[in-house]
Length: 127
Figure: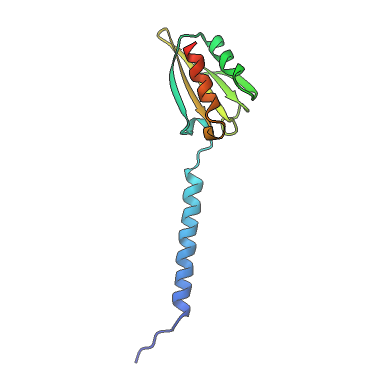
């Protein structure tokens, strides 16, 4: 006659399964986060008639936070809050090509201030 142990092994198996699922979720959520501001879903892009300094000054003037301008690979970058892309609250990239000034704007957690940087970038593109 064969007997199977009751309770203990199935409880251990359930706990180990739960631990495995919990660990997998922790790893998945940790790997899914990319802190670079450019990976933000909140943003837009477009074309502006303004030249680089005029456009960037317009966007800076409409912000309550400190702005830092950098040149990188032919682009003018305006970081809001910090020059570190993992800590910046926003980024405006301006590229000049073929007589056009193209911009891309990224804002971390734009819902908190109703997309103030995005709105500033769009408004400055129209002026």
